[in-house]
Length: 181
Image (cartoon, rainbow, N blue to C red; front, side, top):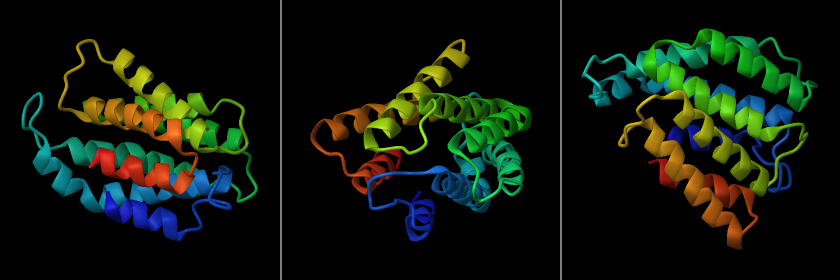
């Protein structure tokens, strides 16, 4: 949401407003983890599918906190590949509940979409988001719209449209935030 976007942008998110490197990606995940923790009760109240069990925010927060713990061990000079490997292992091992499992698949798909790149341009972020969408949808036997799956699908689709006419990374990230909201 807005708080996450503000935190990320304030932490020198984009080098020359054109790329994301390993250090910035790590900070993005850490900011996301802090934001999820802060908003978990609010997310719990949103949860109505498949039943209103009120644990979606808690499960997502526990899942991403595993990532936070791993990233706190990663060196500031780590490569994109090292950050990706640490996050992917942590999120898969730390996934809790259905929402945490789907979140882990979104993150895993995003990281796999990065491939062996050291820096991400706007078009690379779009490729990673499309990979996140594909992996998440494949992980669910019967995907249901109106869930986090819809959010990642619409974010990926909107991002693809955005980069057709613009390569501004900050603008893309704002588009992602607005679409997700």
